[in-house]
Image 1 (cartoon, rainbow, N blue to C red):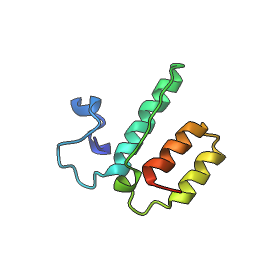
Image 2: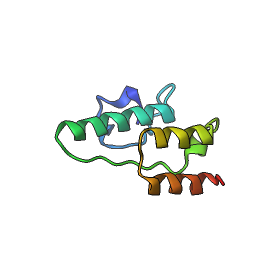
Image 3: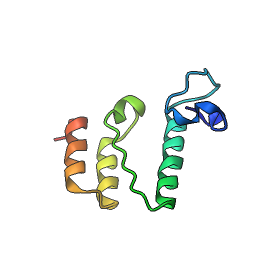
Image 4: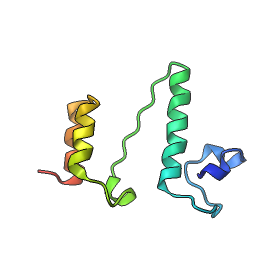
Length: 89
């Protein structure tokens, strides 16, 4: 789904098949962020785990990602899983 489809019936899907201009992974992240904030607004829990970080964002600095996760106090089990998925020492 892209930012151009937010008002359409396709809103419930996470992927956009309408060939909208400039739709990309970042647009999908914005949609997910919106859904997470909606969940928080209603005191619900929202969890997302993205395993293909390198595929979505090929210029990701792996060590910086892990550092940011530690800084944000992400649970150690998720940090270890991310390291394993990214194949970091």
